[in-house]
Amino acid sequence: MNLVMVGFMASGKTTVGKRLSRRLGYSFFDTDQFIEAEVGCSVPEIFSIQGEKYFRELESRVADHLHRLVNTVIATGGGLLMTPGNLERLRRAGPLIFLKVHREDLLKRLERDSRRPKVQGGSLEETVTRLMAERLPVYEQSDLIVETKGKSINRVCGEILRNLANLSRQPETEKD
Ligand code: S3P
Image (cartoon, rainbow, N blue to C red; front, side):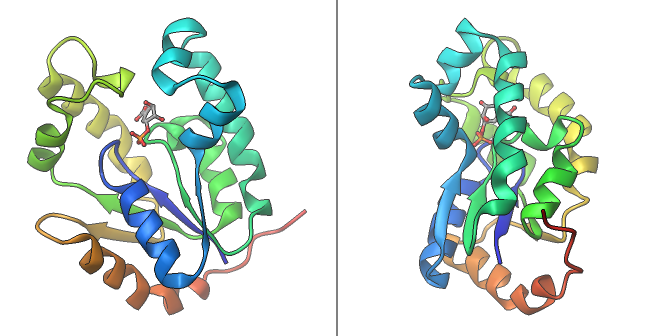
């Protein structure tokens, strides 16, 4: 079984996903890192040189292949789920786990961020409000929602691990 971590940027998908994969003896796969390795440049460089549309196409291509992974914790970029068709693509890979980060924590983490093109320039508060409003309803379609406020990485992992039996009972989707 794979586990697919979804949620807002800086919500801890990579950090929690890596720890979770270690505790389960699973592999770890990060969609942003995969794209960067394939293209040979960073996500901000892809955004500024080829544009966001091109990055989203790359994401969808990667999403299409995720169901081929085995016993892997998959961390996804925060916007991946927003491209039409990707929710279904991710569901084919495994149950979706939404790390729900508190708005204040998010603002604190993103304040000094220079790696995330979606929050550069303009008012961070306004951008976060807008993106949260657009994205929350989609993230909330996940199989498991874990609130992260005030919790250590280990505690978040523990909560996910305790719910694993329920997640693995999700109906299997068609594989090709
Ligand atoms: C994005 C999130 C980033 C990365 C890109 C776009 C977004 O990933 O894919 O900067 O649109 O939310 P993280 O969620 O790992 O920060």
